[in-house]
Length: 100
Length: 217
Image (tube, rainbow over all chains, first blue to last red; front, top):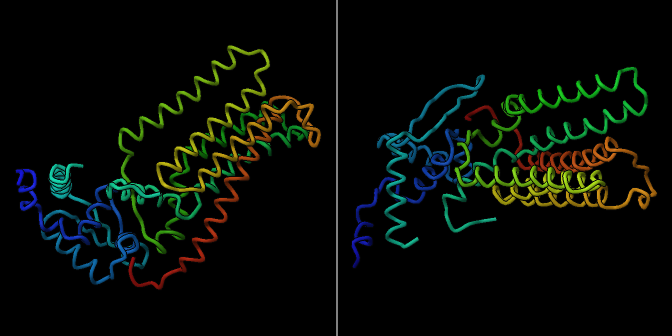
């Protein structure tokens, strides 16, 4: 087994989970996005998306800002510097191991 | 259009979202239609001097381009964001940005070379301008994976070929005299294309995404 493949065992498990990987990928290419956009693009339920965002926020990867648009609650999410760096590292490891 | 790299697809998704409601096309279409409107006013001998019409048109175009993002965001706060959410995308990747700049430079260079090399430059200039608009539309369609931009690109190129390459004397079903008319027809066709695709997209968008209840955004 090559060392590149062995590196897969060190993958960040928080990012590696498919639903969270979708969320982080979407946030990586955007500056910020709201809850409705993320829910629409990922196809997750409100509860599911909310729990994954909480997990990412607890890890320090995502910044969540709760505000209002008029009288409607608005949840804005963005990737932190740590989240961005961790995702880039995750991507490099997967690319190296899978040869893409 | 999908790609094997999920990140490229995610980037396309975020970028495509800017055009999800067709509003940018409607907005751009209105400005393209400004040219035939000004030409019409000029032809009808409106009580405004041609120079003022040209200055007014240029000022409207400049303000329109400068304010486009602000105007669209203000409309979307009421129309789009409550329905399908809000995303602010990052600047394009350098490679994508570089391809866009190179394409624009090639188009400009082609126009200047054409003017320098030919005496009958009017027809060719129209065709090349249309070609440049067409290529930019096709590039946008490829970058975002939006097929309707291929249609807009093809429409622009076809309009350029019709107006520019066809000898005006063969085009007997409407008279074309002079550069202003040719460009006005071209801008009118492109603008109508933008308006139609934008209106259809907006209609489909509003039908597929009804206004939400006031619970969470």
